[in-house]
Image 1 (cartoon, rainbow, N blue to C red):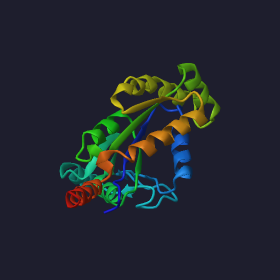
Image 2: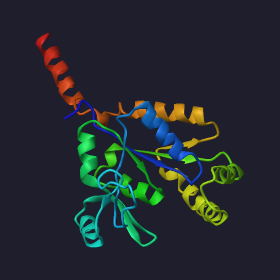
Image 3: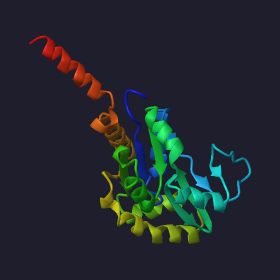
Image 4: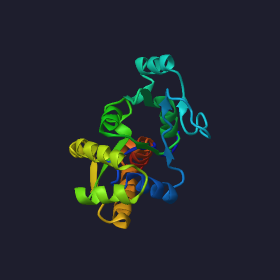
Length: 213
């Protein structure tokens, strides 16, 4: 086992608040951070690699994994199932590697109440204003007007669950938000639950202390 346990770092936000950009910056800062690879029942797209982009599976196997407790979280989206397999995440935790999850509030809630909840670090990213949120969606040029309208409609549902997270950051300045995010992760890596070898160290100190009496 590693000197520390890995964290399950959950990043959630309404679309356009900067979550994906911040996740990329975290990976640049610490390349050992890895994204959780989701399982899905949808058909692979051109260029997608099984085990790297997604774990592609059929619906029967996916439902079996859910029933047998092999999924940390799961949801049905546009007719397909998506979920986070527990096995690879547990292996990463034991090896001292942090895992990033890009999930909505429902996925965050499922992970935060799972068997691995003691290792969860959940962070919600808020936009400075709704007007700015819409501006970001429009200027990034990825979506149609109809899609932007749907994303804006969904945004308040996401924002309304802000108080279910350990930390909440207002992303009004990307550089400052990035710095705060890094500071949170550095501190949380030192959480008592993340340092399994501390018990042995304290026992060594106790034995040393008793020897000097």
